Length: 236
View (spheres, rainbow, N blue to C red):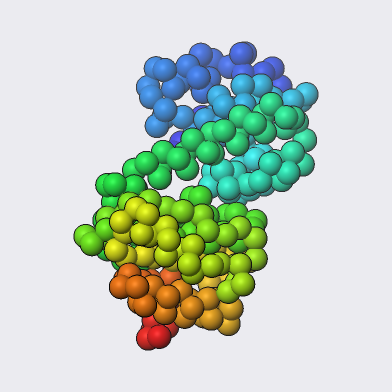
């Protein structure tokens, strides 16, 4: 995407040529023609002293490593950026949550999971950049279509924090026949820990005892994903 002369902080965006202002460009040509910094400027509405909204947007992109990093940032991280008060942080948080919920709407009831890359594609936005660990379960029907996605645990994910009976009860309540376990590694390390292996074994054994089909355990991070099944760690 082409950046549109965005180093004009000195007079403010209102002094730019109309054709270069992000909002006007969006209405004239469409949002796909607006740079990432320009889209953030529209969302933020105003800049700060000595820095217009586009320059502030560019600063956020640099600091958080792109749009995905901004959408995955916590409120406390955003508040540390000079010029981002409560209102601007709330606007970014709301936009991030809208994007995540829209993505989930596209998945649930419509998406058939064919492999771990599908899981990573669909969940990386909402999981890979999080600062805390989150353990999720994808509940699938017999055709491997996603029925629902549930957060089971937030914080330190280990065998003492995730209760197999709760996971199984959730499957029975919605009529699921297959499950995929997913959690993130905020450190970026994709190597399964000993706790990850113990937890997976515990869940797999519990599912098989009641004729539920556990399909995989996928770890996601900013570095990509690891599939237990692809790694040969699924022979429990």
